[in-house]
Length: 215
Figure 1 (cartoon, one colour):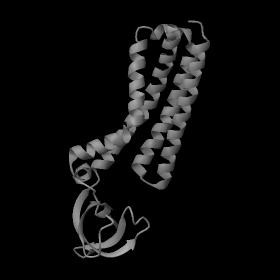
Figure 2 (cartoon, rainbow, N blue to C red):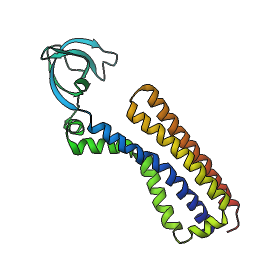
Figure 3 (spheres, rainbow, N blue to C red):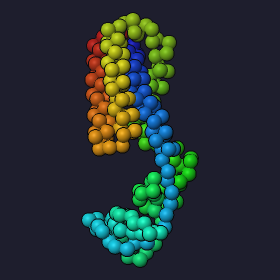
Figure 4 (cartoon, helix red, strand yellow):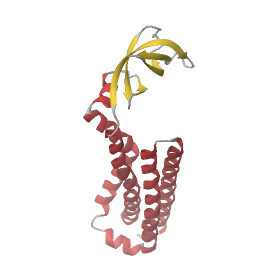
């Protein structure tokens, strides 16, 4: 039973290694894009309600400040024409209305911006891959060469497919980060989907191989 568990753990280590790489690579352009973007705050005056499709959640107003107009400013449902609210501008354009100080800090301070982007790119899914990688590495460290020699074909196929899927997923995520368009977002989601397929297929393959193999 222990032998089967170690074989499966080794397969998980290979899968997690290839799947964590795209997220780490996409973090670099993500941080670059974040810190070459200018955020600022501006107090604006609400002049006209423009949208109330979710009146129990938020309202949207046309607003102005210093002779400049801002469209679609989201505000609390208690807001009314004439109120003044503080908004966050992204490269001079309205981006969001911060709900609290923590949200403000996430866009207006260096540590907050770094943590926000890191969390976006290295979120729970990456934490899961990292945990799987760490645990499987510890379990198989002394037996990795022996396990690979027992399952050379599956190991090589997992690595080759991992390189292909990891490269494609890396391109998709990096393109999604740098282009910032709906098309780029769609490509990034396709890349994520491909990674899910790779993970599912080879996790199942290693599970079956480990279960059927002699210990």
